Amino acid sequence: MTRSKEDLLSELTRFYGTDPNMPSAAQWAHLFDLPADAPLAAVNHVKLRDQAQYAPGEKEPAATGLEAMMRYSSVSTLRAAAVGGAFLLTGFHQGAIIGPATDWDLIIVGHFPTPAAYLSLFVDPDYQAAFHHRRAAVDTWRAVLSTGNAA
Image (cartoon, rainbow, N blue to C red; front, top):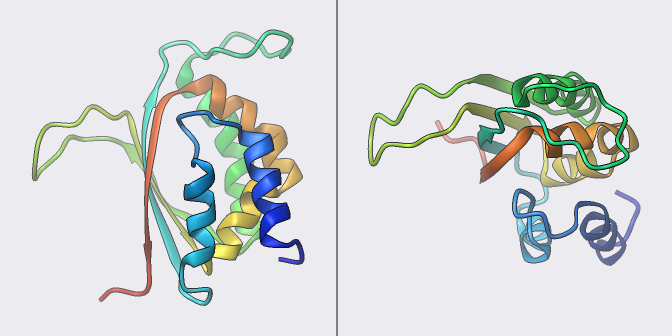
């Protein structure tokens, strides 16, 4: 990335704000502390709204949370590929097999060649243009990151 860390963090926090379903400023900054050349996996847990909730002024047809998520996914999948990433799995949550019960709707596993590639997805203009669909679709989103090639 050609932008400075400070400029990139400023852009990310300005665009995504303090939405609890997005990284905090400290979490965005943590991505810069990860090994720069290590592959990065993101395991996402998503709880969808029954009905998408678009912001006032967004001219979108009524949709379920899943339909809005599919609008977002149709763009995010292409944009992830453009930065060298891929979604290895996107599927319906089937319950916990170890530990307490969980109540997610979707599990999404993304893979990116480096943390910088992952970050570049979030500043991609086409990705950002589709992001309102994700905001409308999602009630709760959690993501856990991992680096390296564990075998």
